[in-house]
Length: 197
Length: 251
Image 1 (cartoon, one colour):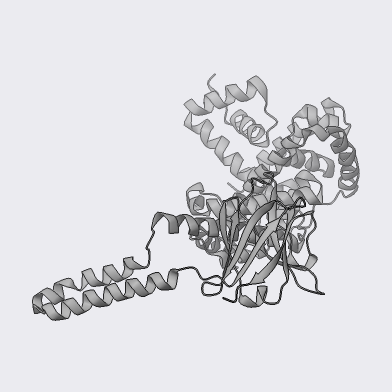
Image 2: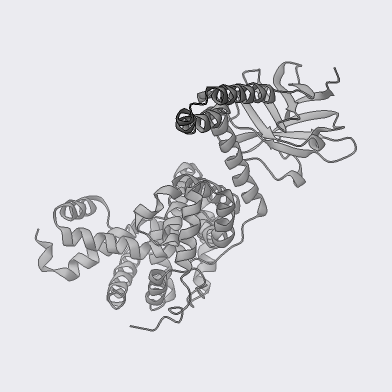
């Protein structure tokens, strides 16, 4: 198993969990700290899913209201703190996209631009490991083993909850290609993630 | 189907399931098997957890400061609504702690058989209650009746200097949309509008305010804003729906 250089550092998870606990006790100052610590990452996620700044702002706002109300139940979820908050952001973002499906045509057009940007960089995103959990670090390692476009298709399938058909349609790729990339991507992730189990 | 003989297939199906690309009948069959076979269920949960980390791997983008303002405004409006609900549920909350203190010391008084002292305590408690009631009676220093562009009254606003609160009472039947908030502004002479707070959906609401916020402000206004309102320094972004003069009560 590869060495994680952050192993010896104090756990960011513990700090975030302590903040979430305080938020669960209606501590507004703790919510502010949690927001300052996590909002760039969560906003980046929201932007990735909904692609428009204004929509992403609505998603972040709704997500933090959900975090404010649900923080008391966080411990029971057994999730790392960033993963828990990330799931809330993703689910709010997907809700928003569902509400806006009427604007499908516009969405596809923007998607093309975004995909052009996305596909240009073949290198793995440099990862900001400051607040990332052990699990995220492992996934990052394994995703970086995929070829750039494969990695993007796998990531977008998850983040935007897209089927093979939707991915093919939106990325203007043959369905067979999408299916092959997803299958190979999953197979590589499976063998890679085993090493971190 | 007995999947447990094929751990590699379990893993692939679990990963596809978590990724979301396992769809339709195949997804339903996998979920049915997972409900029956614990190892399959475990693999599905493991993969859900693994892929959930995808949320942490996105390039950070710093959001606009206005987003936090909106979140804070919504939370303050929610807190104020809950405070009002608590006040309604317990009409004289100030009496409760005094009574508790009196009860808990009762045994001591009894053992001392000091009836006179007890009478004094009761008198003190009653005195505390009376002064609490007086202290809790709303004081009104400023009054404003906001109206719409047809001069129909829509909101009564009073300022209580003792509690440092603006009390707002909706008097019309205006209801903002689910994705909108009403925001109250002070309109100081020769200055930019200053936000006094964002309104919740209750018929009556309170906003914390200092006397300095309303002193020598000739008028108030309410604008229609995105849910949670906008930062004060930018001023109203939506239409001004209601306006009214703010009058200091001197009698």
